[in-house]
Length: 131
Figure (spheres, rainbow, N blue to C red):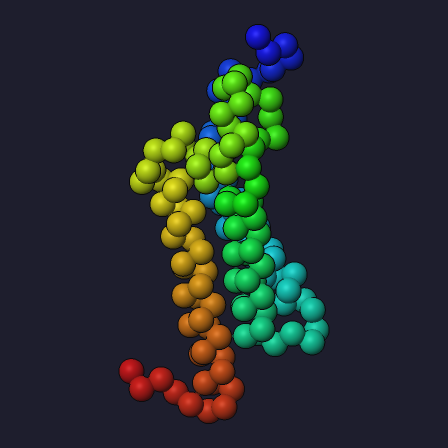
């Protein structure tokens, strides 16, 4: 029996990424990171896109794949202590909307950063895309 556990969820880590507004908060956080990096005066726009992508991917790697356990006391008899956050997400069920979002969002950030970085590089030296 867990005395002092205030939640009825077996593992609250699994519910956080499905809560209302978390995807918008995630996107706003990445946008704020980009704006903060843009405010540093000696960084060019391609450098800022690259740093946004690298910082985001490093942070998500640490948060989702490197750190094991939960910050909560869970009544699951220690099963969550051995799992990363990605393994705990949606109780391990594959192809849920949360897993799809957190798989696709770094890919979209990478493609956007590479596209905008190349566009800035070509436009700054006078080249245009052939298509």
